[in-house]
Length: 106
Image (tube, rainbow, N blue to C red; front, side):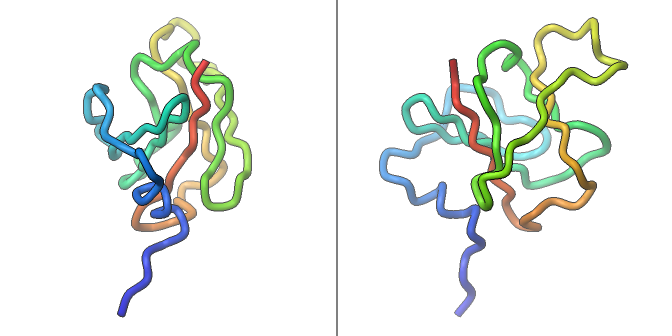
């Protein structure tokens, strides 16, 4: 028997559903009320870009351990006004299968 990683708990939260957001290149979104969950399945280079989310998120943290994620705009993207950037501290994801970031919406 194989157990699901800690972050996969989001998939089983009552009322968790798909969102009308387009599928991002790095994974998927699910949502419950004012909480949006970014399921990061593939880690690219640099920040994880969330298209259309700039100004729409109060806070971002890993669901697994609750640690906060820096969402400041990188120096080379100052002119980009439509993306929210998740600046992860490591090139390795905390969960190799499904790293979940909980985004509290404005």
